[in-house]
Each structure stands twice: as structure tokens, then as C-alpha cells.
Image (cartoon, rainbow, N blue to C red; front, side, top):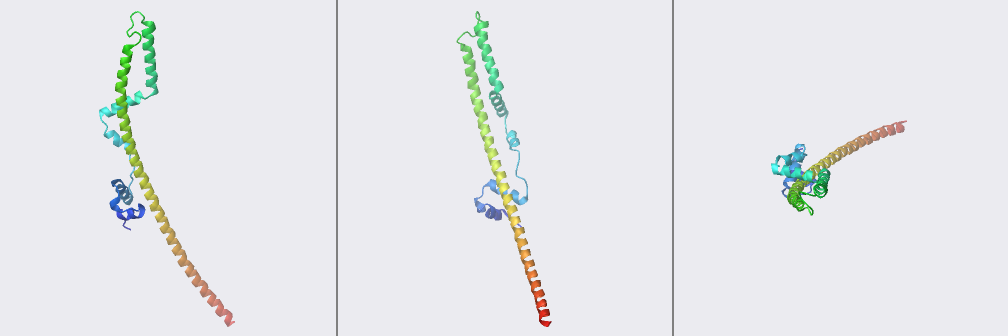
Length: 187
């Protein structure tokens, strides 16, 4: 049975082939060829990442971790304690900690855009994953529909076979009844 993408599009997607997206065409083609469609999207994304992308992801991963937050709190406590109690005479950054405010502002000014870049890339990865999930789900649905179709064909073939067997049995019963009727009338 030679099926084409046009047949599958009409039968399973209830659409004309010219109304299919490239993704749907690819899924139908993989269904015809009986090939897998799933792939590791992380590898595809990793191949196209630049050094800056990897650096931004690493900074965002570190900057958004509890270890960074706790280390930064410890740094702030040490800075404050060192400048208030330990260095009362020659404080490196006396109260109100102007230099600390400058450092914190510079860290925030650099960290925020880097984290936003990482979030934008994560959004793009999520889009790629969602597209791939749709593709795999569509293929699974098509394969399930194909299995249902095959089961329906098998069941239909069995019903036709049983109908033919019942007709043969009915014919045999009629012959037996005719023979018995002849024997009763002759005796």
C-alpha cells in the first residue's frame, strides 16, 4: 500500500497538503519512512552558542544561586564589620560606605544585563523545546491513528471472515437438515 504525504494529510490531519507547515510535512514524511523524529535539542543549542553566551549562562547560573547569595551576604558583613569595628582609625571605607555602594552598583549594573541575556537565550531554548515537543506529540498522534487504522482493518477482516464462515456453516446446516428431512420422509 503506497501512501503519500497527501493521503496522510487528508486522512489524519484532515487538511490539504498545501496547508501543512514544514514541521508537519517533516512529521508526515517520518511517519511514511518509519523513522524517529526525536532529537536532543540541547546539543543543537550548544553547537550554536558563542563564548559570550556560555559566559553569560555561567554568570547567571552562579549569580542566581544560593551559594552566591550567601557568599555575598558574608562579604557584606565582613566589609561592614571590618570598616566599623576593626578599622576604626584608618577605615578603608568609613560609614556610610560610599565605596561599597559603588561596588554594589557596578555589580548590579553588570549582572542585570548578563542575566537578561541568559534569560533571553533560555526563552529561545524553551521555544525550541516547545516546537520539538509539538513535533514529537504530532508524530505520536499520527502513529496512534495509524495503529487504530490497522486494528480497524484487522477487525474488519476478521468480521468478514466470520461472516463467510457463518454462511458456510449455515449452508452445511441446511444440507444436514435437508438430508435429515429426506431420511424422515423415506422412513
